[in-house]
Image 1 (cartoon, rainbow, N blue to C red):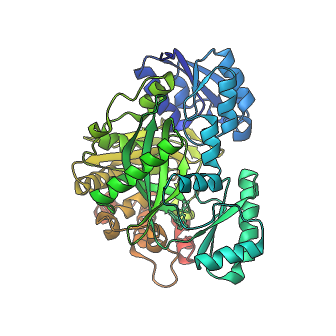
Image 2: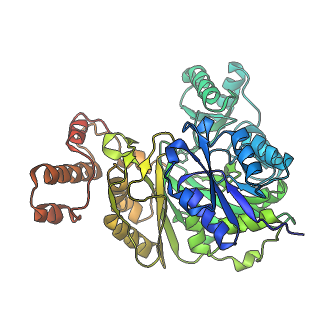
Image 3: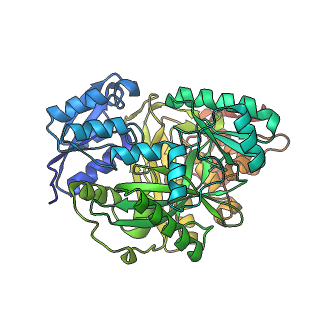
Length: 508
Ligand code: MV4
């Protein structure tokens, strides 16, 4: 019998805390927010029904502080906790602590979370489930001779990865045997520092693959469905920047195969709630399981836009014990959605974080435009957490319409007071490889590589746009010049003259 939630604690901050609070309110469930000192005025607090301070801004003392969050959950007498993504969302100890207290953790079981968080064990589990995995080891690397033997058999290049990690942290590509010992040591050190576990494994390195992920949902009655794929190959230093659904790289036949395998994998581990299977798809359209994320994803809105399914509300209903209320064949992809992640970073200063206060902004609007963000006037973007401010998403009846709509909204979107990567997105959406949908995981590196000789045109455009705005600001140059030259509103403020110095020094 479903257990109806009356009150749920949202153990997160920023745009995803707001997204979850909104889903709870649409289900007529009270939302409890938590916030650190750095988020004292943040907008997720004002949207919640109750809010409790976590104190110290440092994540380990606040949003990662299990005893503090559990104590607040007890004090607020909540029925469940939604972890969002990041922070404690894949922490099996936290999920277990919730269950121990009779609180529902809105996500998979601690056991499945632990299994899929161990990348070596998850690969072994997928092999047993008949899921194709990237060629490599299903055991940890324990010695250099063992690593050499495996790498010789796989053939270079290989990649060393952290078993306790994911998302590229601790990843080292090795092109020849003489680099192997140093790379193993470096990967182990980084894994230990990032995850407290130096265990590493080895895979064959696939050149220029696509990063395709399948959204999965499983209910507590054993039913599992997929919500098709997301293309996530546009990444910068293993941080996803632009995602889209459907993928322009895969056709319906391949889509059906990958989704079928993802369902097979989810059933094999009796997965419940929302999860994502990540695959690499090579140039011959072979696909391989990469890793699984046992949580909701940043980029879930594009799946919601093309399928019409509210993933967060479905997570909550599944956690209450309801069955998934539709059949797989009722789920169709309609149109095309693209997401741009808006970061408080300065693309003209090597994408360094750009904390500060939002002095003014203009939100893009219009048909089929969605902005999930925690922006508000005077909002302080703190330095303590991931610099994601929000996600700008568009839907179009075709990819072409979605790209045109995205280009329009990126021009309309203005944020003043901090530096953002909007100027970067405006360049990307004009690039031929992007507009034609012909890109892979090397796209950013290739298009924006540090200039050895003549800098790439996109880089020049970004710097010139920044210089123009600086010229406008500093010399009050005529508005006509700025608009005519760069078709941008005078509201725009990006970059600064010293960026030119960086640029001239070839630093990017
Ligand atoms: C790979 C790979 C090629 N071969 N593994 C894993 C974490 C994710 N963020 C990147 N991952 C990759 N794992 C093997 N065996 C390619 C990627 C990859 C990638 C690598 C470098 C630069 C950008 C990338 C974007 C997506 C995927």
